[in-house]
Amino acid sequence: MDTALDDTTTPTERIRREAATAEEACHRFTAWCAASTDCALHGKVAAAEYDALVARARRPQPGSGSRANPASTWMRPA
Image (cartoon, rainbow, N blue to C red; front, top):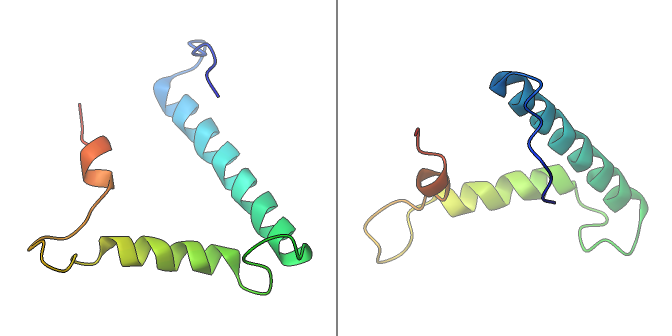
């Protein structure tokens, strides 16, 4: 969601708040998945499925000769 940047706090505090918000959303999602048969991951540990997905994405890709690292393209220091 696009919103105006809150410049009343430090960049570190903004990042901390964003991380806390994302973590809470993850917890709500995994709780919903555990409780709802509408979730495709129902009956599985959703957080573990996410971790496995990230681990697979970081493995070398067949024929590429290099490791896939999605973070390398958008998390570079400025």
